[in-house]
Image 1: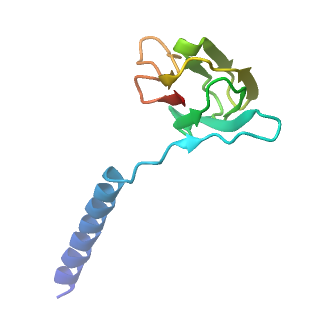
Image 2 (image 1 turned 180 degrees about the vertical axis):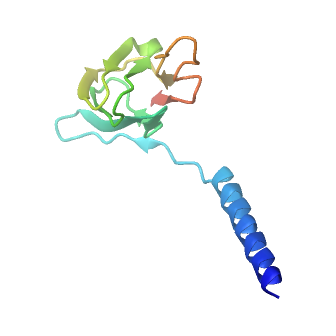
Length: 137
């Protein structure tokens, strides 16, 4: 009887782990972050750079209005960067640091955000999923 309970408990634990893993695989997508325009006309947002990710991952701004992005790295060792090549935005960021970048996008469209840092011969941070979207409307 004791063996049956143990087998049942192990089976239940395995089933719960499978259910949790499947739920993580179908997590709901996070909606884009529409950057608000402050009273002074500047669009301000904070972006967190973590191990191979940006949060928020998708930002929407208005063309022709100044943008001020506060980039905050929460890593302890790994440096990152923030690149929007088509808009000539590129900023390096040391681990644990915060940097503010300012620019005014004039070109509308959807542009990739990414980190191209890498430790040779490993894949780049972008290859590991550190990318997002910057949308100018």
